[in-house]
Image (cartoon, rainbow, N blue to C red):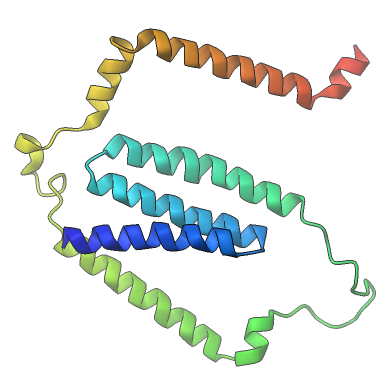
Length: 182
């Protein structure tokens, strides 16, 4: 069962990464990036790298990808070829071609995906969920925290100062009107 999950997450990550390369729509590329990052997070979970999986989801999916999507949506140029005063209603082209069958296909795909994921989660033997993992399973968060505060303290502090300098520099470059008014 773990091998099926591994191959599923690997196929999701590789397939979505290829879709990023082959699509011409930037918004679709951002959504395929979401699938790629979720596939990689799933591979981290299967490799027992729980800290990396959580960091992958929170930092990249929760922060960077949302920022990219907002940037794409806010900078999207409108099509100037259409008439602004046109009285035709806005429609979704996919629904016009196939009628109500598009909703049926969407519900079938979503339902089958839900059933497949639910079956995978129900049959998987997660050591965290059944309580038997306290002997053989150990979280990587404690190990990473101890190493960052002891063995890698100097590089960790230098990285923090470098990121602070980059943040101050980006703020200075992004606000030219503040420099002119003073």
